[in-house]
Amino acid sequence: MILASFLVWTGAGWGYWVGPPLSLEKLAADADVIFKGTVISSETVQDDWFKPCTGFVARETKFTVISVIKGAPAGGALAASVCVSRRR
Image 1 (cartoon, rainbow, N blue to C red):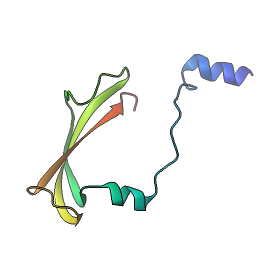
Image 2: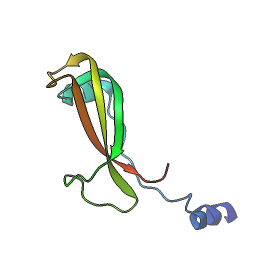
Image 3: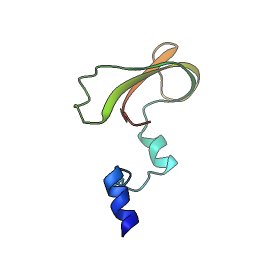
Image 4: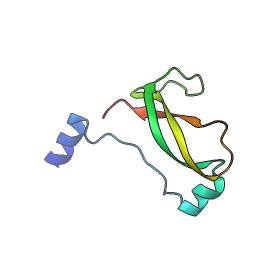
């Protein structure tokens, strides 16, 4: 009981439920593009697509494409935006 109280008090007990993981086959079937690449930059960005959420920021990562497994990416580089926790 004391440990549980300590975890909640320190914030270590904060979290949220995450659903079951998707299989690799499901992820591959749903993906428009699958590629092998190298990260060339990663930075915090203002992205209107992501609604503001306390404790999270939008980040954009740019890749140089080495090989394409599925789909047809435009050009030799791709960018992906995700919303990540500020805690790291």
